[in-house]
View (tube, rainbow, N blue to C red):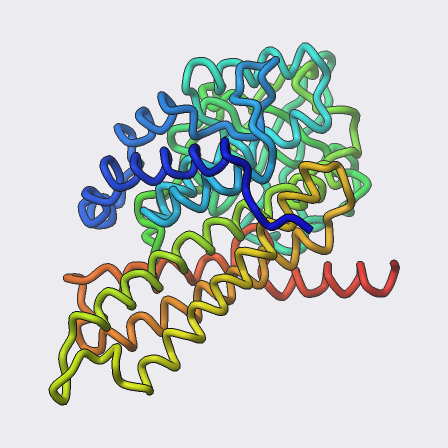
Length: 379
């Protein structure tokens, strides 16, 4: 077993870390307060080649392997999880195109993202359908060489800036996974509108919006694969994307640990730094063990993906465990900071707010446990 990263991966990690320290961390507080899409930072991330990490070189992408992509994501999230969510959004939206799209679709949709810096959103969740993907109510009726799309999507990341929307909808008469299909929709198409932007607890520099489709005409040429393939594409997409969420959770947990250690060495109580108090040392030691364990799970999932080996169980484990650990570690960081940790003058309260969503999006952690159990039972 080899637990070491390659020289190239280490150099890239250090490059991303320097970028984060210079371009992201100084702006985190302002980004959180404004609750706006981080346009300028995203332009810089794109210029550095730190986004569209899943797009191969033949379509204009950076062509990095899955493990390297996770390392980059972890470092960006170490600076700001909201920015990491924004920078990872294209990957989530493009997995269905890479998996189910034909060559013409890949060239048409992926190149503007990879070469021009445009954005895409993954449109799966609805007001009445989250974990229950088969319960989608959005419908696309075939009419000649086009589909007429009607419905409403909820909690869609970056929808207000996206050029393309990867939309999952029903193309059959009955509800159920066999009637679900995937269409790529241009956001500027007549009938597409962006509803309310959510006011969130955390991830405030990542915009989350409602998307409404009213009699939207979508070319049949934008159907990914065939009708009824949508459920399979959505499940495969989430499979591939979950380690990215794990990497984001890992990054913020690492940041919280670093902040807690630094503060514990500076904060003096009872005549000595609290880092010398055994009660605090126990908390820090547990935090460090949890972060390191999460990193091993996340990196293993990336390794398996890079090798083309089965990774469904490890994908769910990496997301589930890292998200739970992020919540625990950021909460512990607030505890170590005491009253100061509960104020916005210090970064740990934001880490704690940001961490919660990691247990919810990309499939709740309860759903991850269902996936893990199924893999165990059916293996």
